[in-house]
Length: 365
View 1 (cartoon, helix red, strand yellow):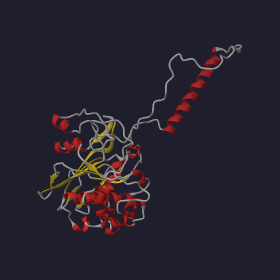
View 2: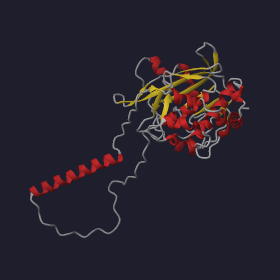
View 3: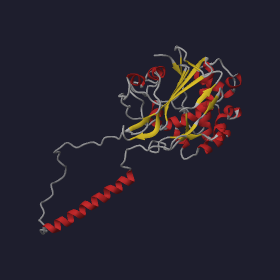
View 4: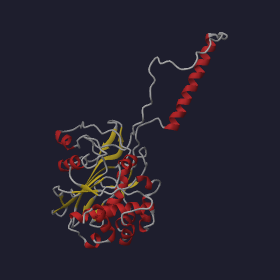
């Protein structure tokens, strides 16, 4: 197995924070090329958590205790009376069932979220221009929010992509889904980190599914967004949208990975590097930084619950804010990973104390 380092997250942590379910089937409509590009085994899902099976009693099993004595039969009722009481009983059963359905949520159909809208320039500015002093004050720890470091690997062929300028640059690849709450949380850290090395354009507003864990987590989408940098090239594959398709009984596929992206997912987003996955499963979020550092989520999305994008972004100037600590500590780890693949540029970022702390923790120095 390739050497890895830097992951301080236990299996129990992963099972707790990622409520994942069945793998999506590999069947794909369309041409053979599209089918080949689909990740083998399909991505693991955040929704539809498996409910424990209730123990069943064998048919014909005897109940314990003494058998009750026979009772004297009561007065006979007329067929009309029986029909009346039977109807009343049926009505009561139906009413109780409807109440239970409303209280406990009988529908398992996921709920679509709102469509993408242009992101507020003011909010984007707050996320992409977090003060250097905040990065250094936070470092890679949090007093409130558990931080899950990425893993550093070695012995792999460096990942490169063609940048918008036409140059071949160290590559960063993100695999996510718009309905996914873990992806929603991770995008905040990714945008913050990569904005230290370049510029995002055309980010859009997005929120995770209302029927998933940590519902309606406010975030952004990388779909049709672009990124320019003199140091790295960034690609994002938002595989699923946040729109449910009753015709297929699944989330609508938004972007299918290219052949290269699918190969990255199959090789690195696997049990070899993430033991919580089963063979043939691929999960999101997944981040590959130059085939040198791999990451899933870096913090739990529950910390963002009930907050608007404006509220999350506005707090990013306060290193004491738990949300800031979660996002910024994660961003320091991701920044250190970028510094490890781009030659340590720019020096103002890569030599900062927050990034140096992450480099040391990941053993990238």
